Image (cartoon, rainbow, N blue to C red; front, side):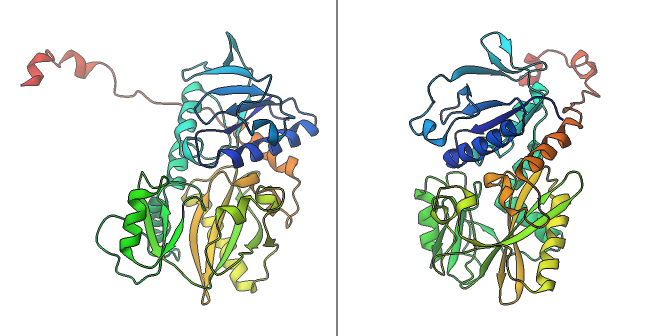
Length: 361
């Protein structure tokens, strides 16, 4: 069994609430399996709190739950989370943060600086996974079938509308819209709170089918059953359909699982998902989303820290949630913490530099 884990969830992100659900599910599953677990809540305004791992989602509806203990984080060797002057004895972090700085490489960089091991991709791979333009460019360069994806703000696209516009950085369903023309896309770029860092545009494929698959990287690269989310109309599969139906969270969303697909389509999706795991340097468990339209399977995007950690997808092969979580922890415990090199920084350039004033011209 891996060392004592801490489940980190929340964070200043539009997906804050869904992250709480994912984190509490993970913490509860681990405690029910007999593990001692620290549950660390990251508030919308960036504070850290140690909370009861058996908390319910409603305890967070008004913010920090009662009896939570304030923590501070030190991003330096030997750092990590501290309760007053005492450092929490954390062997590994299970990162359950969705979107924003919890998924885009920011918190991963903090964990690296503190020497903490954590689940999910490292900081650079996390940044790639959150950047829809960069990820689309990567898959296209690798020869995988991908829809054209352009940055909004430049010349009008060379393909006809309607279009789907998405925040360049963000979750797979946050802030996305279907628009008929480029002028409307430009207006959304300038007004949407989710597009402050840019937006991407791609063709909207009416009648397309969403197909999602999870991939895990330990103990070997393995793919899950494929799901077909059930939309309420021919529009996009939005945040409300994905997260707010039933009891909330990805587990409660309507879906066909496993999806009824031709054998060749299923094999293609599995093959592309496995290739993407290597290309994008995925780690732990990720979800990769595809679109099927007129007999063509397109790579859509990757979710490096998916809702519910994609536990609901592992029905074939059947993997219990606690086993999935345990493997995620075991994978990173066996890895060295991030090491930085200072090779070449031997002071030579400083000794020969002369005065700073002489360099100002």
